[in-house]
Image 1: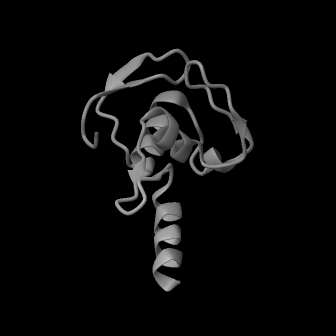
Image 2: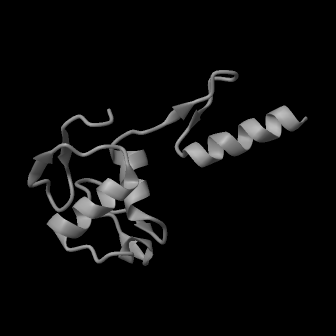
Length: 98
């Protein structure tokens, strides 16, 4: 999906633009178009993506990339799907260490 046009569903979805699965680009989009303060995406907040509303204290841009832009990694060995690349890498590392 990287580099393709995606519908932004933040606050009812008024933007259709090239949103990629890069969380820094998503964070920049939130800052420029929706007034999310820089570095503020790790404050306790609610996701304002249409139909979500999840309350969290994590990176809102990472949440959007993984949940709403569907950026998941599948393990070639076991077929399990990971929402975060770092978790997949951790599991893979542990698997090879056994």
